[in-house]
Image (cartoon, rainbow, N blue to C red; front, side):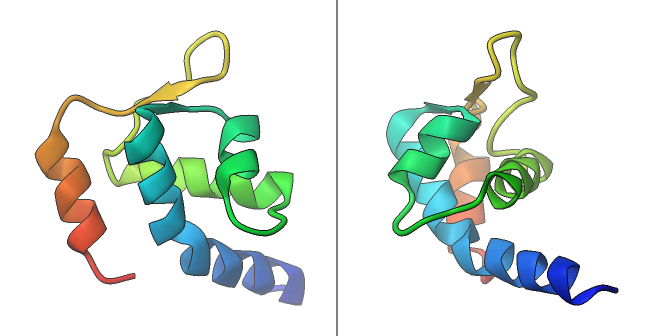
Length: 86
């Protein structure tokens, strides 16, 4: 695995809890919106990976035509994800 890939994976892991909080607060999210609401600078590729991770966790659904992803209606899944250790 390349050093760049490892660094990106580490950054995604470090920022996943914050991304969950942003999504739960706004109920829907897009790449640009998530990047703006995260603390510090976050690169496009990291934001995309964060959204992919949130989709795999069942917190957001697939992207719509306009690129937004909506919080899934199962609040228990979102709450369980927040409590899960990173």
